Length: 260
Image (cartoon, rainbow, N blue to C red; front, top):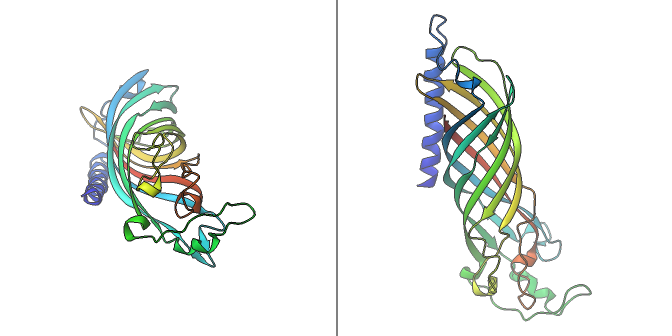
């Protein structure tokens, strides 16, 4: 369902862009919302579809065996929505605050049974008691509800009839409401833990289209976490899960439809 929604948003963006281009190329057509961008502040909302994945840096001992990666991430598709506040700085620059709510579900697979070879311990790691990993132990379905607060600096060109291209970049503060970071249980109890408070950077590219009553913007945005989201398992938990990863970071590509 989420993948279908993402495709629908992309298809809608393409159709709107084609329609708008055909409409706005006519030289005799009257400019619309001529004074809209002269406002010091303006507001709106957006809908988006997401493609999310994890960037994983594996532990050199517990995360890989030879050339084989023992931990793998499966991408997922999801959706979100948010609000827009724009502050006009000058004719070419705007500052945007776009808080939103994003929903995601990703999958991590841990084929780490081979770590039993380190059960006796090493110079840097204590011994542990091996356990047989079932299919339920190997797969973690990770659900996330993300409160995303991006602050973006937008650089746009001049209007071409009733359209205007732009690029934007900025930073995000992101709260994961389903992080389980405060849980005393860990992967031994089927609980995957990650950080609650996160920081990311974003880059965006889009075209603004002006209609009689509103401005519509289809855009593509990439968001990349900067901090390590991994929360270590408890000290007595075997190194099949969190220990097998050195770094875990979310990366997302968003297809956005903005209405202002």
